[in-house]
Image 1: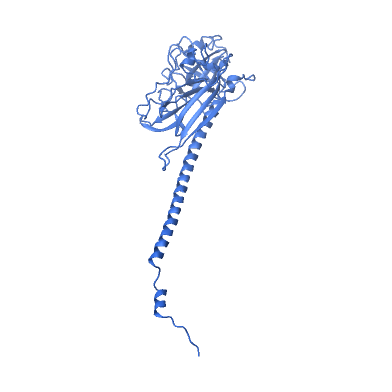
Image 2: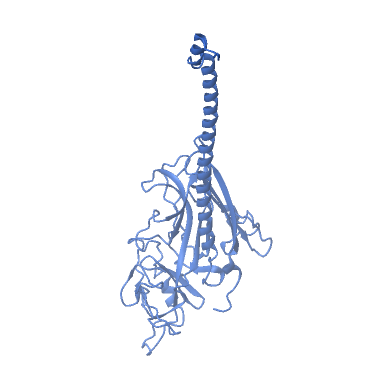
Length: 399
């Protein structure tokens, strides 16, 4: 006879009763702890990802800005007359590009328009602008303007030049047999707003193109945006250049005569920071590169400090110093400020000169696009670079 154990009523009730209150509370506590740790880990991961993206974007912008500046600086002085100087019209003030006047930037003040000193007889390959940039975060930033020849239009022969200095005509066929069509869409095309260095022997002048016709002729009318076209100025003008022997316009004109004056296209490139928008209101600071007066249909006649191109965003400090070769102490990290230029600064007892510059030292500081959520602060990074100006240190013996 087999006997089987029969569960009693209590054991049946226990098997179907579920979790006790204590068990539920313990399990909920464990779940909450796990979820809290998980959410905290996710929050840290999100913050780390945000920080990584902000830092990466900031560094990319910083490197881009520095790379573009270094590329341009490596060509400074190329193709210019000895000493890196170009004569400009005396007795008048020429306009050099700079940042727009700021009226509402937080912590800033209105900058002085960046113009040359009236009557300055020449402009050098490097024009320092210490403290002439906008004031950002309480710090006055620097500016820099450089000159270099454009190898696509270098020492071209002219077929004619107006007796009053109002125009030049480029020879369609150059002495080496190459063609120089200035309006066929090629790299040697001439457009309004471009700058040209006209040279005859040791005499030079800088002019700005105001119009071009279809017959290889570029005009230099008065009222150009940089105020360079002053043909009647006593010195440094196209009129003074034409008056220098040998003559460009003999009478009678021999058959096949070639004017001794040659033309080279010049790139005037300026760098500065701008922390305003087109209306002058505060905006994110950025590094601006500007060629000549800028681009646009009015580039040749209307001076406008809003014509620059942004090459790097969120750059909030630009500081530039220079290494000089003065033949005595060869000072380095010179600011080229008023004291340096007056002879009481780095080159004392002599004044420092832009023609002595042989190296440019750049300090760029960038910030993240937005603040980090957890701290409410921007990331910042600084990049330093030094550029030796080879064309101002060595002479091209093969030109």
